Image 1 (spheres, rainbow over the protein chains, first blue to last red):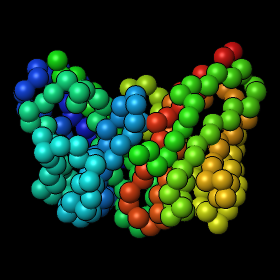
Image 2: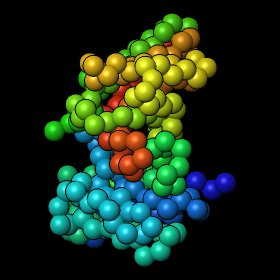
Image 3: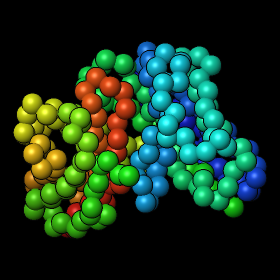
Length: 115
Length: 112
C-alpha cells in the first residue's frame, strides 16, 4: 500500500520566495494533518482537515502560511513570503477519522531551507 | 506553552540493557497517549499506545506505563537493540479527537 506521499523531499529557497509543499494522503483516509518539526518545539501541528474542510488552523504561525485541500487526495501548504526561520521539516500525515485510537500515518517529510 | 514535554533530548544505553524514555503532560483532558519512532530522513511511525483506563500496555519488547496522577508516561524497551536507535516522540490526545500533541522528542542511541 502506498503511504502518505510528500513533495518535494528537499527544497532550498531564498528568503522572500514562495514555497509550496504538496501531499497525497493514504487512499481512504479522510483526515489530513500538516506538522512542522523543529529542534526546540518538536512536532507542532499547523493545521488539519476532515473531509477536505479545515478544522483547526490555530497552529499556523502567521498569515504567511496557508493550506488548502481541494480534494480528498491532495493538499498543499504554502509559505509566502518565506523567511529563514521557516527552515524546518514539514510532515504531512493522514488518518481515518474514528479509526483505531488516534493513530496517524506520516509521510517522509519535506526538508525546507530558506537562505 | 508546551503541553507535552520530553525533558531529555538524548539518551544513550548499552545494547541488552533497558531503555526508559519519559514524557510529561499538563492537560488533564488528555486520555490517550502514543509513542512514535522516527529514523533519520523518514517520517515518524506509530509504536505503541495506551488509553487512560489502563496503567500499562505491553507489546513485545516495548511497554508503556501511565501515571495519571503525576501526568507522566514512560516507554520501556527491554532488551535494547541497535535498531532501536532513533528519535522517540510521545503524543497525547483526547480520545476520538483528531489532534495529537507531540513532545520535542528524545534521541535514543543504543551502543553495542
